[in-house]
Length: 304
Image 1 (tube, rainbow, N blue to C red):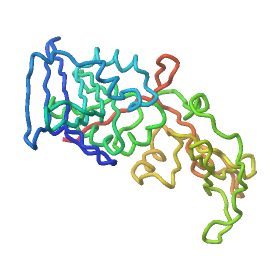
Image 2: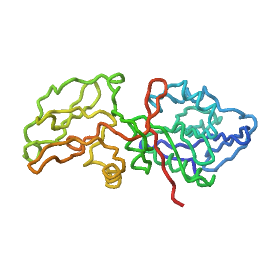
Image 3: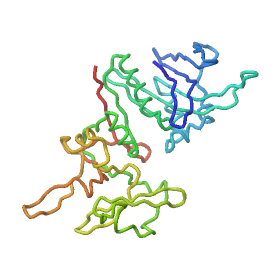
Image 4: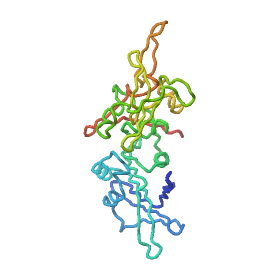
């Protein structure tokens, strides 16, 4: 199993540390490339994973909204701790001159499944890290992986085969988005009446603007018989822009996970799945609360 990756920005993740809990004891394995030769160590002098290194290697920035205290606490409770980083070595004295954290994976192992406590990485490494977790599960003769996700990366997990755990909860995506980033309450620049193809804009048209270093998107929806602009918050999904298999799952799952929007037609009442295909709410799912934050429970069953 390879832990060596390369991110979208060409960062070469050439070093990793693995901590595995067996029979309540921890074993440590380190590997890195040096002069293009793979070095392997089971080194007793490295008998702990340095929390200071995780912090210094920008663990909080890598995992963004995840607090440092949660990362540290989760490391102590995990059965698998995998750290991937990029380290550049000085040619003269082999002194570490720079390092960058590429990814963190924290796992709990149960008889029936592997639970992902935390997984985060540089752009382009997310899928590779998930594939690595799947290989660990298969090698452990386990065919189920579980996790609890915040709302922004929901679609990332959906397109990688994770499905919502069934429950009785209804969830508003990015409900607390404004507590993290301030965004304009309305569109300042009048959007065009026609698109670049000289076609009159209608329901589903997306308009973008930049404010304070952030780029925002609005979409035209129908609300109460009127066409209005709605801000597309992080985590919102548009049915027309997602993978066909994910779209089919969202529309056909029983019980349905999408909140339907009803519009009257001449033949009676016809259900449409949200305005302009914009997914802002989920229902019949299982959510958990942790320190005031809500997460969505998801599971992937592995194929043998």
